[in-house]
Image (cartoon, rainbow, N blue to C red; front, side, top):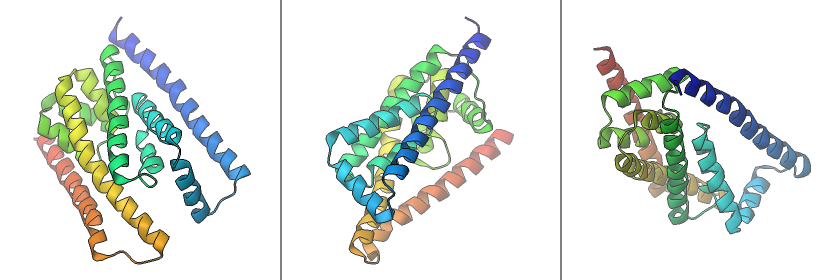
Amino acid sequence: MSAGADNDRWQRLRRWAGPVALALLVAAGLGIAAWLPLGTRELIELGERLAGHPATLVVAAVGMALLFVFALPGSLGFWLIAPFQPWLVAVPVLVAASLAGGLGAYRLADRLGGIRPASPSGRRVRRLLARRSDFLMLCALRIFPGFPHSVINFAAGVLRLPLPRFVASTVIGLGVKFGVYAAAVQTGMQAWREGEALSPLAFWPLLAIAGLLLGGVWLRQRLDRSGSS
């Protein structure tokens, strides 16, 4: 099958999968809002009650993985898992769900090898990985904000990067990133529940996030300079 036909198939799949997934999310949100009009405190308490059921964690993780497979914002699953699960549970589940979705996207992109990124950021990441796709670069793209994970997954599949390198960089990079973000969210949640100000020790995740943001800006600027030289 030609590259153009592969790309057409992928675009048709995206046109159906994206709207259907978003429609289901919107319908669920509207249904909850209509039947259970909740404030912030009530909504968080509901999330904590639901988090006590193992099925809730499984559904959130599977949904996160499926969104990543179809290049949709799977990181939304972070807000269904990180605030309501212990750190030692939330981080491995988030990494496992992201890895499963990433592998699905990798395989799909490999099968439809002729697909072309539709967005400028997608084309930029693909060009970057075509030039440099070593382990440290893949880890940096996973850790630093500003590089969409779905784009990385599909670019890696299209370019057929070595699978062990893809898996190892995903686990390590997202383990660092999710670990910092989950610590920050859970620290804030604890302070909110207790009605207290953040303690000095609670600021380390916020400082770490600021460092990741600055690192992402620095990396993007450096890549832009190297790409234009």
